Image (tube, rainbow, N blue to C red; front, side, top):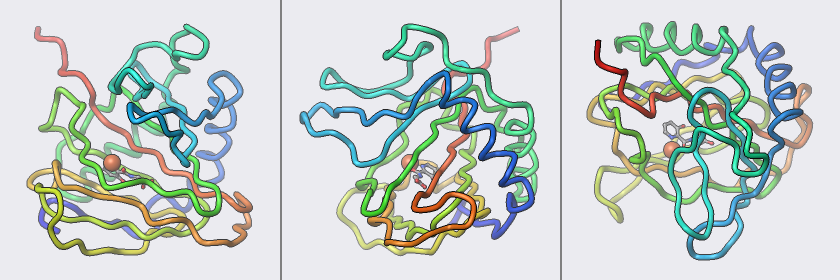
Length: 203
Ligand code: MD6
Ligand code: FE
């Protein structure tokens, strides 16, 4: 789609390091299944790192500078994640998104992400860099209005999606993850979405 690019295998040689980073982050800020305002629990387990983490509760959702489970700041973002975001954006023709937070999604077999827009960020000019690890998935995306036709593509271990420009507010979803076993993650898929949640401070 215009403004969205898949860089196949872009993060493949970093995957083992990224998975070790995820483990270290989850030791401090464990994966959890948020409840959404409708009351249901999400099938995807989430955690975050960096200055801002996306959170949800029955009261609403958005960015928080602390882990609501512990009241502590999120673990810091590993330098290689920031660097990966810069290199992927550059490869797709976008400026450095200078991510200030990363949402980390973990999918077991059957977990899915419903159709949504990423619209909670203040800085919509920055692209989002998304890294897929472990089991494959089907990424579905449509236009900026809900309910239109969608297209889909497969995301494999090591694939990086750069999502900016006209695609930045497109609706997208992840179909239920199909049963499988990945050599590095077993029956799991991970997705990192590196984003700029808040505008850079002026001056
Ligand atoms: C996922 N990704 O791949 C979910 N959002 O598990 C997203 O929701 C997403 O991949 C914004 C930009 C890129 C993405
Ligand atoms: Fe999204």
